Length: 129
Image 1 (spheres, rainbow, N blue to C red):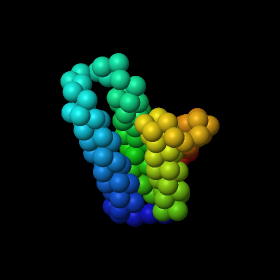
Image 2 (image 1 turned 90 degrees about the vertical axis):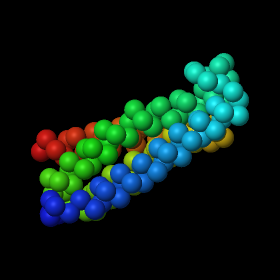
Image 3 (image 1 turned 180 degrees about the horizontal axis):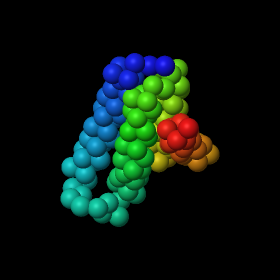
Image 4 (image 1 turned 120 degrees about the horizontal axis):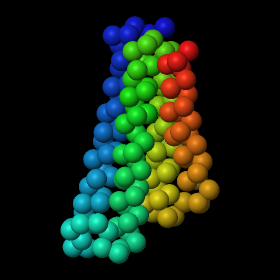
């Protein structure tokens, strides 16, 4: 069991996802500036993709990171936390790139959501047992 006062794994995950949030936000903002689209997507498919990729990140990452932190505070094993965080990170990066760039195989999008929701589900169940 972890020492509940040592939440360094959760802190590192939060920092990584915080940095990704800034990068994804800047990608939307830069494109918005270049394209002169003040609000919404302006009917621009590239803007729509960037906004949705960022939005999906924001919709899923906070709850997942919070659940991982709560498991960390509850004394979950470091290996378990690292595994959940790694799956979440790979899943979120893959999902973002699949939507934002449209260059990855489309099958990666649902697989990355399975990884994301699987992490959220596993972290939730761990807190219940």
